[in-house]
Image 1 (tube, rainbow, N blue to C red):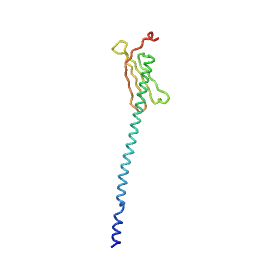
Image 2 (tube, rainbow, N blue to C red):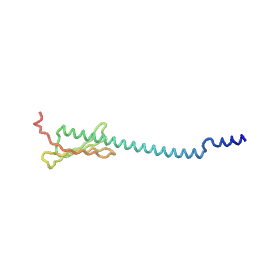
Image 3 (spheres, rainbow, N blue to C red):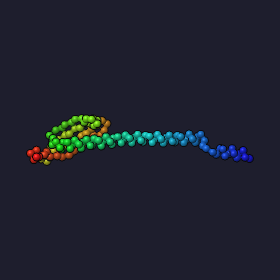
Image 4 (cartoon, rainbow, N blue to C red):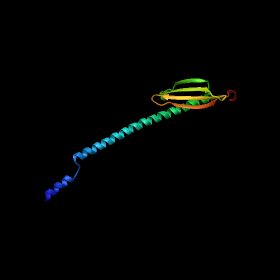
Length: 131
């Protein structure tokens, strides 16, 4: 009687090969989904960082225009240098219906990114009033 009981106990221990293979397939599918999700979130994060950098450059360009009082009607453009060499800028100064008020638009574009456009209104400072 003892050998028969021992045989039944041995059969109940562990997993069958089919169960192990099924678990591996399920685990592999889950890992593939996880890796793909991480890859797409990395791409989204890179796009967000690129957009944030472009916005910062646009804000800086507007402040440079404001500080230099360079409010000549027309469009100017150029490329950034150094770490920001991926970006191009364009600024446009146009008249508005209000006397003395100008519309200033700065557009920053970069490789593979959406453009950032900032629009503000400025008055040209009176040069004689500045000491």
